[in-house]
Image (cartoon, rainbow, N blue to C red; front, side, top):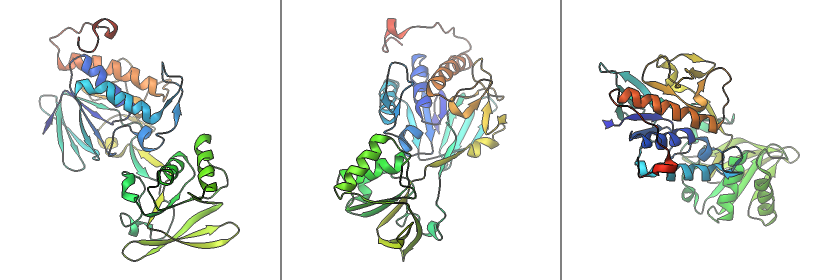
Length: 336
């Protein structure tokens, strides 16, 4: 049983910043996330995408923002359970909670904060017959460790930032022996700098760029051996490969959270804007996962919500103590 003051479900930017705010009040945090690393969408979908509305940063890459938030949270020594989804929550007789993950890991705390962003992410799978038969046998929807593809032939399909970024990384760093990028259109949805980099690598012969085409078949025995690509003008092309990596993004859903007895409206958790508490005392919802009148799904709004939720959590955890607001400009971090 993992014991902490606040269980934070979701390790995206809002969850990570909440560690800092809780730490200032000497409250410990443990984060649970179904993804294998912190950062949420910022790390998983668009780590190289610039964000322009973070105060004090005219522009910051999503991945760099996550790195900075992790550094900011580090002095407060948060715990992490990663690669496991929170699937069950039980309220105890003493008004505390036990949260259990998909792998059976149990966490106990008096407060739970749901910072799940848009929810649990599942990969968007292309409609290829027999695709699921090759999952973990050459078909991967998320690149967790680039070194896994060292010296391998890879076909990446997709036209967004994730497909572009990984095609660039695997080819430019000379990790994969061959990289093919297949996209059904001639233009890409990703960042212009990434598109230009892919074009340049294609001109250099480091990326086999196949546009106006899509992967329609997958072939092999125990593992992937080749894919069938349908080209707009050239017809079907058989491409030998070791890996097919369809990167069409991730689709969100509340997942098990929807069955926890929380008030749900349009796939989001209804909260009281006084402190972003839910209809279950002791459970808060912050960031994109919640909804209220005039809700804006912005990271900076999530930071604000997490800050107020932590103040309320302190009063719940320590009803006998008076919380006097201190300023980091006066006390620094070590002063808390």
